[in-house]
Each structure stands twice: as C-alpha cells, then as structure tokens.
Image 1 (tube, rainbow, N blue to C red):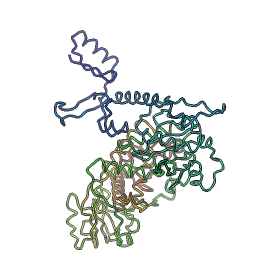
Image 2: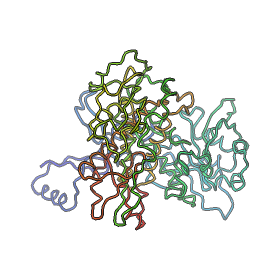
Image 3: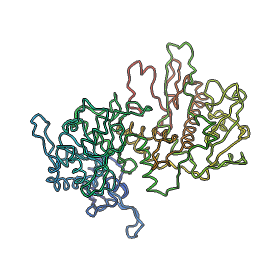
Image 4: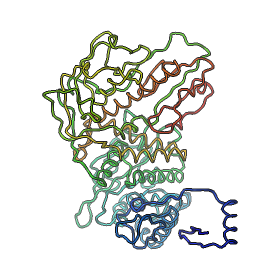
Amino acid sequence: MLYRLTAGGRTFRIDADDETSDILQWYIESKGTPEQLVALSRQQVVARIGRSALPTDFPDPDVVIGDPSRETGFTRGWFESTVREWEDRKLDTEAVGSAAEPQQVATPSGDDTSPALWPVKSRQWTDTPIIADGRVAIVTSRGIVKPSGVVVAGPMPSGDSLHKFLLWNWGTKPKEQPQVWFTYEALTELGLPMDDLPDDLPGLVSATFHCEVTWSQSGWFTCRFTDHDGQKRKAQLVLVPLMYLDQPPQHPGDMGVAGVEGTSTELPEDESEAVKILADRISWLAGVGDAGLVPASRWATVGAQLLDRKRQSGRTKQIEACPLPTEVAVEAGELEPTLPVKWDNRPHRAREDAVDVRVDQRAAYLASAGQVELGYGRPKELQQIKVDIFHEQRPPFGLWRLNLAPAEQIDGLTTKLPLPHPGMHWKEPTTLWVTTRCIQHLTAPVESGGAGLAVEELEITSAWVWPEQSRLLRTWADALRVKLQEAREVERFDYQQMIKAIYTTYLGRMASDKWPPYQREHQQPAWYAAIRADTRFRALRYAARIAAEHGVYPIAAELDAWIYRLPAGTNPSILDENSTANGKYRIKWTSADKAAGVDEEGAD
C-alpha cells in the first residue's frame, strides 16, 4: 500500500508492507478526520506576502499539478502551514535585524505610569498574516507595530519623528503611499489636545507633524513631507479617534474599519485590544481578492480600488465614464428604483395570533452585480428601433423609453403585489426610461413576477444602446462573494459588515459624479440601474412564487425585503429558500423573535 504523509511542510512517500499498513490504517481510522487538500496558488502566495514575485528563500511547492517536466505544463501550490511558517521566520529575521534602528526614531517614555512598552523585535500577536505590513504601520503609546503584530519601533517621541520614521521604514521611493495610524493614547503623548480639539484640524495635523495637509476627511489626512534633498513624499495619516467625523449621510455611524458606532463592531476602549482588532481587520481587508487592498475614508473608494486591481490583473476592456445621456437624465428621474419605498398593504386591524415575518435577499446587489450584462463604449441613440432584438438570447445593453398602458389593462396583475415597475400606475398610462434588464422583467410571465407583456406592447419610442457588453463586475463580485462566505463561516459580523459596506456604497456611488478625476471611469449610472432592475426582478419573482405555492402575499415591502403576515400555525420556513447563495431569500426576523428579544445583528 502506498501512503503519502505530510508533516512540517514536507511530504513523504511510504511504501508500506502489511504490518506498517495496519499501523497507519489504525491511526487513520482512530485519529484521522477526512479533509480536502487545499493549496495556495503562486498568485495567492505573492498577494498574501505582499510581493511581486516569490522570494528566493521561499520553500519549494508542496503540490504540483500537471507535468513538471514541461515549462508551462504545471501549476504549483503551497499549503497554508508552509506559507505561515515562512512568514513567521521572515518576521523574526526582520525584527532582529532592525532592533537597533527604530530606537533612533522613537525612544521609550520614562513615565512610570505608562503601560509597559512593547519590546522592539517582539511580535504581539501571531494570528495575522503579513499581507498589509508593506503599506501600514500603527502608532500606539506602547510602540509602533505592523498589522502582523511585529513591533518595529518604540513610542513616537514627537511629531517631527514621523518624517524620520517614513524615511526609515519605507525608504526614499515607496512603491505605494504608506498609511500610518495613530491611537488616542499615542496622539495624547504627542501633545495633541484630543479632548479640546480646534476647528482647524488640518492645521493642527500640519503643525504637529511638520507637513502640508492636502486633503482631509473623517480623521484621514493626506500629508506631503519634504525630504532633506527637496524631494516630496506623501503619506496618509489616520487619526483613529477622529474617524467618527464627517460620516456619510447614507451610513450614519460608519467609521470604516473602526466599526459602526453603537454596535458590537466598534473598537473597544482598551488601546491594546483595539489595536489588535484594527490590525486584524486591515490585514483581512488586504486579502480580499488577493488585491492588497488598504482601508480608505469611504468604503466606496475601497470598492473602486478592488475593481482597479482586478482590471490590472486581467484582460482589461477600455472603460470610460458614462453619465446618462442628457435626454434620459432630464426625463427619467430616478432610473430603475427597487421596490416602492413605502409600499404598504397592511390590513387596518392586525390579528393577534398572526405572526409577521420579514424576509430579504442575501447580499442582493452583490448577487446581481456579478451576473448582469453591462455595457461599455460610447452609447449611441438608435434612429430605428427593431424590437425583435429582445427575442435574442443576449439583447444589447441599453436604455429604452417606454409607453405603458394602465396596469388595470394588463392581464394577470394584482393589487396584492407591487407593480413590476414602481413607476407604473393602475389607472393611468406611464412613460418610463428603463434598462434592458427591466424589459426582460416586463416581458416575463406574470407567474414569474413579470407583467406578461409582449415586446410590441411596450411602445418603445427612443433608445440609447452601448456597442459592447459583458459581465464587467463578475471578478469583482466573485472576490467579495468569497470573502463574505468566509466571514459567515467564521461568524465574524465585522467582516460581513465590511464586505456589505464595500459593495453597497461602491454601487451606490457608481450612479453619481462624486469621483475624483483619476477615478472618473467608475461613474456608471446605467450599470447601477441594471443591477437594481435585476434585484427587483428577483424580488417579484420570489413573491409571485410564494403566492402561487402557499397563497400568501406580502403586507409591506422595502427595497428587496418583504414583510408577510402569516396565519397562526403557519410555519415561517415556507418563506425561506433554504440556500446560502447570494440573492436567495432568508428569514430576517419574525414578530415572535422580536417579542422574545432575539438579536439579529449577526445576519448580513
């Protein structure tokens, strides 16, 4: 019998005789647990360790798939344990080699009341990979630490020491802009009046750290320093206790990786605990899509950063900013809203024994973003519209001006459900601008949540069509989907919250012109409209199926969520699609749970 035993990052071949085979088989049956063999690809390894290529001292692969005798005929893989052991050795070596130098940058405080300083070269936690160490350092009252837990310097003694630290840690020409994070305690020791801050925060940062502040938002400051040779360098300073400022109005309380105010994700008061959690989140974020992401003052910026990295690593298509054509922007209003914001069909009197159940889609927008065809290139106005293109498997991506009859004239529609498009009216005809995805929805059968209309009944009078289309957000959505699933499996609500914030805020900002010049290509309102149309289609398809199979209708709707009022004795599980896939409906809460005080915070 042939066995292969992997231990300590090495694999051994064992040609076992009968006696050896019996012994090994006993160990397998009594001590072993069946497990799938998982290895990291070369691309995953270099992304994780923050390099552009494998270091010369990196261990040989644990797994080779294909023919290793052919130059391009095989794929190498490394076990997680092998990569982690190399990281640990590398961190130990770097810490020992740099132990003396940081003391010139930062010296320990002589205050006996200060917490014990972290020894330089020590590692304060060992369960965080080094993926973010190349971009980020965290300044605390106990020392300067990297996200992996390696202490690279003692406490920063003064504001002008920051420039010295930037030079020492990142050299004269860093490949990417560094981020230096400061805790409340570290800022207090540097003399900043944290409990009596002036109105001019950029001025305070500039005076403290001897730099020019070129931009600031929510505790983030982009600073320009002048080296001794006159060269300019930039770094981002993040003052953690100021991250509550300038919160986005759509997401009040959101402080980025510092969590959401008033929830379990908010960083604790204790500095050491807070720094460890902060470092963990920064490192986990860097692993999204193997893209080496860094935090930003707005989650939408992180979403754009991920898409930029995915485009750089793949076969990129030329994407340009594409605001809506003037005709559409003027006439359309809100293009492709989701379910009506205030659709409410609650009876005036609630039955005491009835149970209200709220259901919504898992990661609704993320599910749609990865599967919807999106247009690119410069859209053109059609002079002649041929509706037979909608009979094709992939009709072109476009915006279409429809004239719809009153809903009461459309067979099969019911007042027990919202109309297929929120702009439709029961008694009056409607003129709408819609996406291709919405036309597919309107022409779907009523029993599938559509309006059951023939294309000819839509009366299309104008159209703008994009020359090309593709699933342009598929790899972006896949990267987020994988990390969201990982967050669910380890039951980390903060991770789930981070991923949700990335995709919801990025897709929402996609509809606006609030992008700096170098990111203008992210302005794609027609894409966002198509994603919302797909989400709405899925919501109404679900509601139509529940009505057909169980005879129950929702009493209220909000975005992609439904509220049902079930008769006593009805099992709420009839509303659950029993799938963890994104886009599938699950029970969010029941009135019985609310009465019992059940906490639903952990659901994404």
